[in-house]
Amino acid sequence: EAQVTQNPRYLITVTGKKLTVTCSQNMNHEYMSWYRQDPGLGLRQIYYSMNVEVTDKGDVPEGYKVSRKEKRNFPLILESPSPNQTSLYFCASSLYGQGYNEQFFGPGTRLTVL
Amino acid sequence: AQTVTQSQPEMSVQEAETVTLSCTYDTSESDYYLFWYKQPPSRQMILVIRQEAYKQQNATENRFSVNFQKAAKSFSLKISDSQLGDAAMYFCAYRSSIRGSTLGRLYFGRGTQLTVWP
Image (cartoon, rainbow over all chains, first blue to last red; front, side, top):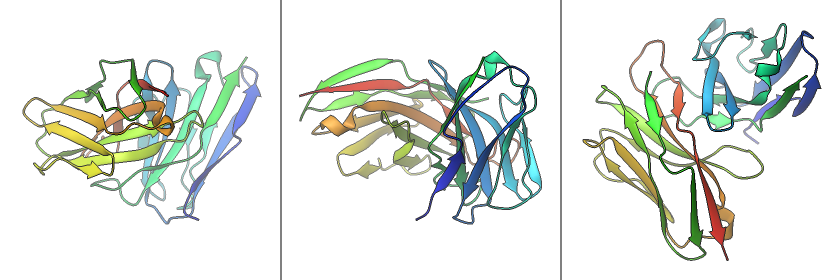
């Protein structure tokens, strides 16, 4: 089944404790992206990747890191999480960055930083 | 950055009736793509319908159709014969077709929460 998977689905952590949210897609997509969703703000892009080893900042990259060592994986790293990073996070992928291509979303990761 | 505005935070509709969700956007580009996504209580983001700006014909997917007014920068979603399963948060999104730093990025509106009454 074609899908985007994220782990963990739920995470409660404390300020400053490094964490990684994994994202994997099995559709051989080139483009991958991370969004965060906050009430009343919709979804905002954190980072994106056009292909392996090619990543760039989105609208709200502060406090996050990403890497794209393999085409299928695009982990989101929070080196020192803070309470303002409490949010719902989505990973998404599409065949290419440009064009009509549909972005497929993962199931979301609910992160709480205490 | 592109701006997408959904002016209706909440809407409600009776089952089997028709409802229209509004979306406007701000852009200086002539070619772009527009999307409506549905987010049910499961939180999964599901693509409902999409429209290419250079196509004048409005997109239709079963009970879902759009009214795309390019000059007015308006992209409304019409849901006909509403069903209980249509209850969800609906997001309008814009995607540029121009290569550059914003390539591939979806710009989302803040969402419209749709309630369907039996």
